Image (tube, rainbow, N blue to C red; front, top):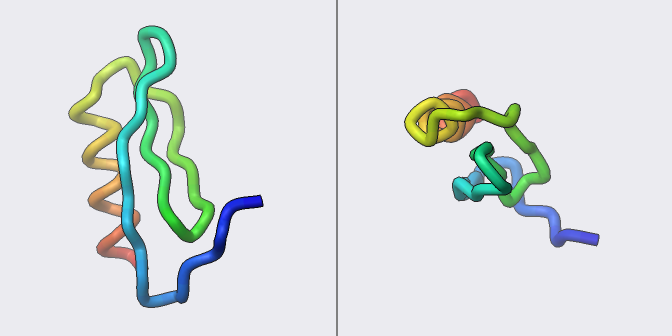
Length: 51
């Protein structure tokens, strides 16, 4: 089970699986699969700023 981060600590990464990319956060959030890496990065950025 992943370690949970504090509410104020959101660290996102972008990973690829096949032809899809998605964003993940240390809080457990996972963004939707995207064909565009840029859109996955935008998802991650939006998540970090909303937290």
